[in-house]
Amino acid sequence: EKVGNRFDLVLVAARRARQMQVGGKDPLVPEENDKPTVIALREIEEGLVTNQILDVRDRQEQQEQEAAELQAVTAIAEGRR
Image 1 (tube, one colour):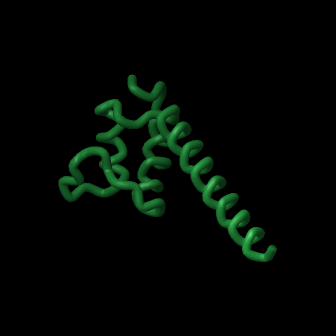
Image 2 (cartoon, helix red, strand yellow; image 1 turned 45 degrees about the horizontal axis):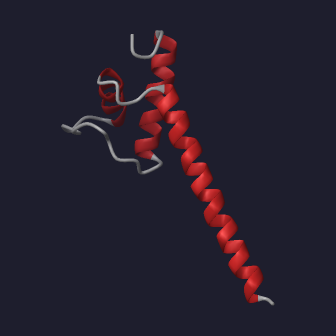
């Protein structure tokens, strides 16, 4: 019910599990010795994670990364003057 259908549930859970495994994101629920996929499903069940929430977080992180890169390039360019 929280995600829509089983296919979307699998995609959102896999995306969130990947964030925890590769992206170093912290779980939003107690780990309880569970694997990232189970943790992701529990987060979805509690309404803490949806596809829209993941999209917003990804956009925010991308904007922060771009701002940091721009700041670094500006600092390098100013140092060469």
